Length: 211
Image (tube, rainbow, N blue to C red; front, side):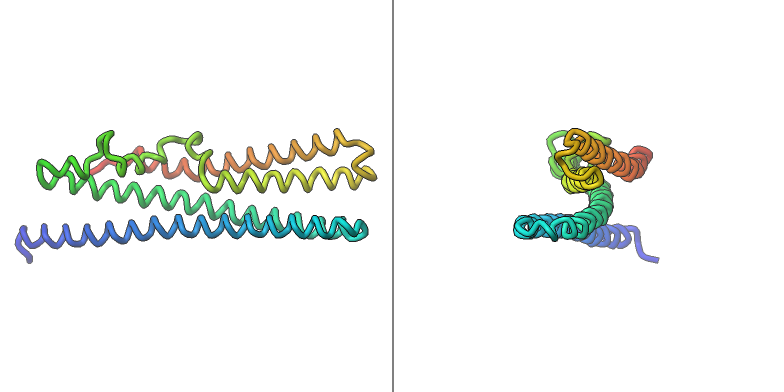
């Protein structure tokens, strides 16, 4: 068996390597989130430009919208689900990094100034983001894409209602009201879903007892 000093040195070396791996993993979640959000926004922008061009030919506009809007909406759903997952993963990595820093803070008396969890340590504050609960989760990338996708879903619902009624001029209030209700319902459903996914991590962080 290794002497205690050798074990301690090996543990610190392994901890340094583990911290580097966690940092790389946290960065990968941010990169993936940015890529998925950009893919959705670019697809939406291209579709809007195409709609403006197709609108000049009224005979094919309804068919075009019937194909493009559901496709965009489904793409948005897939993007939102993955964005929430990457957000949860990122916070879990940050919490693990905070545990490593807490160990570093106890190595020497002055180490607490650099690695401690005090209020003046900005790195330590990142690990507490999950404890902000549902209100803090409103400002994630997933929330931004979910809001836009809810507008897409609400717009599709308004167009569908107006088409079934024989035109937007027949009952504009009903069409707009239906679209607004669907959009708000979709965003509310997303908030419930995101809150439940983040709540799993919040409970884990609350119950966690540092060694």
